[in-house]
Length: 156
Length: 81
Image (cartoon, rainbow over all chains, first blue to last red; front, side, top):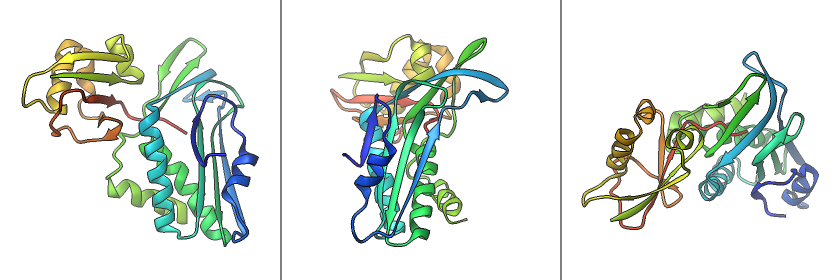
């Protein structure tokens, strides 16, 4: 299984976790982002995710490189789903393997923070009464403050 | 020069299309392509300060010169995860 992917099918976290590890690792930390039924006071019916796929794949590679630079020895798996997702379905799956658990926890958290900062992916929220494109962070991969902020959160 | 402009999320809705072909003159930058687009679709203008841009599927700054055949993408603030 590819470690980095944009996928239209359901995500498989256990296969991703199996793909990141080898005999040198003592820990795998995983994360699943899930579509929830409420947002900003609205009742969410479902989400449609859109991505600029070739750039998103490049960004995933960058995030994996950043994680390895910061936590040498970490292996990162990162899959994001696009298309229509129902409540309760997984939109993003991350697995971080490392010889020791502290680095695996940090790298996993770092990866999701960076996805939210710089991955060219968008949620189109369909709620009871309308729909709205969610707009979060202006993506700037060279913004050192944003990267430092993700590292701080990861190591908290 | 001929370039392809790709738009995503709300920007795509405003322009009514995910992809536009545009003829541009010499000396064009990503920023000048954006400003032309914002004149054509005035609802895009408020995004000037919050968009990111990319050329040929790699992030690029607005002052980057544009070449014939480039794929230029304008990205509103992202919301993955």
